[in-house]
Length: 115
Length: 115
Image (cartoon, rainbow over all chains, first blue to last red; front, top):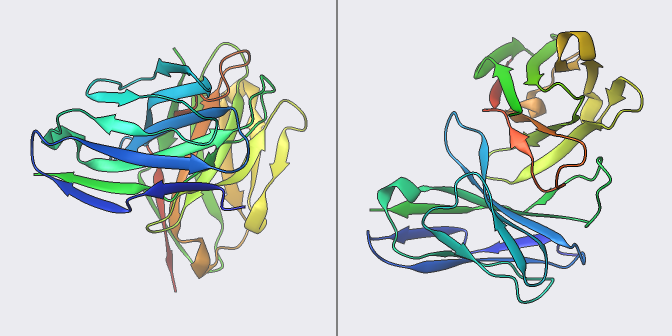
């Protein structure tokens, strides 16, 4: 299993440009999430999905869109990039269950710089 | 609202010394607790988790953590530091019955090991 994969690894955008960060998992996990990591702030939840066709907002959703058409893929779209979106983005997945001990599996991250 | 506080954004210890990374949470209900490690330019990897079973939890790479309800703490320890332990460590919490994808992370502690 490849686990959770993310592309690209690095990206530089200009203010106002749009782009899509790709995330895929091959573990048949129902739940998937996007986080951003900023220095001194840990990871903050952007959007999440509890299954194909079902998404919801996390702590910092503004400026981002998501959709979940398949179990495997959960792309994150930046509609109009801003310098405040410069960050490292992590995708995560976990088995769909209300059992508390389930851990999230993280991808390697995408480092995004917005000029 | 639940929150997580990691005391000390940077911790430095000598090789062979005790490692102690502090994590306190605020919740009236004992949450599920996790410690993740992030090596440079990589994603997050689960070290250990507390899910209301034994209060002393053993994880990978010789780390362990003890859940103390009276102190609302879940500190991470390792008896003898190794150079390979240099990384950033994140404590995370999730409330019971809350969506498994809704992890709240602390701000992280960067561990440096001195030879």
